Structures are given as structure tokens and as C-alpha cells.
Length: 394
Image 1 (cartoon, one colour):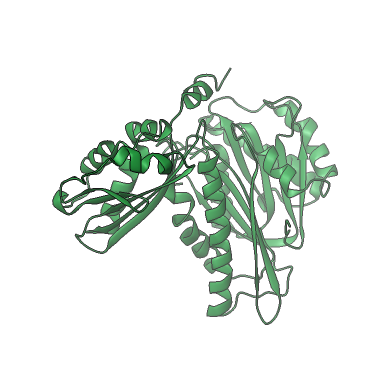
Image 2 (cartoon, rainbow, N blue to C red):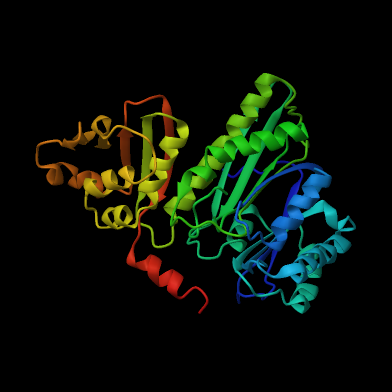
């Protein structure tokens, strides 16, 4: 059963910024000031809401919530776009009787167009008036673009003083290949936390979740993960044990949402779990995993349920990772197909046919050169991916 952290409310309305007959504007609000944390895209072109968010959190981690719109990214819009972003915060904050700096903005959608501020003027009062009337599922639906389903995950953790709840929602299906992809995520928690630790914990969890997925090798101008902890429960993350337990719950939520993003990849039909071990370094392992996961040839073979291991070995070889090819072993699940520089004998197509029909497919590479390791979730490429992205602005 969906578990909502104490002291948070949701609101969703249709602003008409791009979509018709659906919610596209969302407010997540804490009843009381919360500790805010964020991790953002590393793209050189950073959208207006990313710029404003980073500036706000640099000055203060005491915030009340997030204001999110879908359909327009407000990216590559110059100083005018930043001014538009700040104006949207002012419109909503005024109705809530709080400071604009207490709200963190996030946007997703088409890059380039500026907001129609007349529509924001009309939508902001309705968004404020309906606070508390929406639920997390409706909020998750309202932030979607090409997503096929809303993505939510939740966990709880207990201590001697109380129970903390963690709830996350995210959107993302294409333009996904973090270092933090058109990817937005929002995590709310009712534990009492230290601001510095909360930011560090969020970054660690993202490095093990959202930064370990790829759909198409593209990263976005708008990638944002925000986390809020308002201390409304009796759970206090004030010891090593309580902090470890809360971080484990946070990681579980992040990894669950990350899996859903790959499961819902634009045109995707498969989830490929790639693990590389025995590399000279973690960086080498990561280079290899990403080369395999981002390879169009590997992805199309996956869609065709073709166990074309040669494409995987070739991707590993061009990855830039330092390794001895004679030490590489490749397995699909428990079946070894390549080792000691040559294929394993046998009717591999017949052996692998039932594995390739599954939605979840394990690709395991071991190198025997060191202790470096990495993991990555990747989708396949289908004909539908081309259709979705060819018609995106239509």
C-alpha cells in the first residue's frame, strides 16, 4: 500500500502550456520547512530551473517544496527564461504566503520555447487552491512526457524513536544516460536529517541508481533529482545506525525508480543488466559497461532477441578501457559464450533462445585484471523509438 510521508501535500492542474486535457503542472509542498537537497545535469546547457535550483540551494537548504511543469523545458531560453522561471515561483509563492526562494522549480519537455506567462498567471491560483486534493499517483502522471506509466516507489525505516517514510516519484523514458537524462525525480521523507549529510546521502544513492542507467546515450539540459526531509515523524537520523538505515531506504527507492525508467524506455522491450568485474579500475569497468549499454548494434540485437555476442565483445574492445582481451569472459545469465579470446563451442543460439525471450537479460563480463567493477541498466532499441523521437514536436 502506498505510504506517504507525514506533512506533505500535492496539487495538480492543467495549465495548457503544451498538453491538452491532462494535468501538466504539479506542486509538492511540505506543511513545514524541510531540508532540501539536489543533484543536477552536468550538461553545459543548463535549463533555467536548474540554474535557479542550484542558486537557491547554495544560499539555503531550508525549503518548502517543488514546482514542476511538463511539456516545456525552459532550456536555452537565456536570461528571459530565468526571469520567467523566477516569475512562476513568485506567482505560486504569493498564493501560499511563502517566499519564492522556498520553492524549487523543475521543468521537462521541448527545449527552446519560452513559457506563455499568461497561462501561468491563470494556472497558479488554481494550483494553490487545490493543494492537498491530489495524490502521489496523480502527481507522477502530471510530470510525464513520453512515459507510458507513472513511476513511484516507497520505503519505510524504523528506529527506537519512530518510523520514517520515504516516497519517490520520477519521470523519464528517453534522453537517458546520466551523469545526471530527460530525467526528473522527487523524493520526500519525514525524517529529521542533517542538511550536509542529506545532500551527501542523496548523491551517493544517485551514483548507485540514476547514474547507472542508459536508454540512448543522451543527457538532457534539465536533469534534476530533488529530495526533501521535513522532520514530521519521530525518526531522527542522528546516529550511524539511523543514518545507514535511512540511506538504505533512500537507495532502494532510487534504484526502484531507475529500473522503472529503463522498463519504460521509449520504444523499449528489454531491460539489459550489464555487470563488469575484474577491471583494472572502476573507471575502466564503467567505460566498458557504458560502451555496451549505449551501442546501437547491441541494442538492436537485443530487440531482435539475437544473442549476437560479437557486438558486445566489439563494444568492450572499443570502450577505451585498459584490459587484456585474453582474460575477458562473457556470459548471458549463467551461460558462458566467450572466454580466453574465443567463443565457447556448442549451439549457443539454441541455448540462449529462452533467455533472449525474457524482458530482463543479464550480460556479465569478467576481466580478471583487477578489482574494478561497475553495473548498468540499459534498454534495447526498437522501431518505436525512432517513431517517438521523429514525431516528438508534432
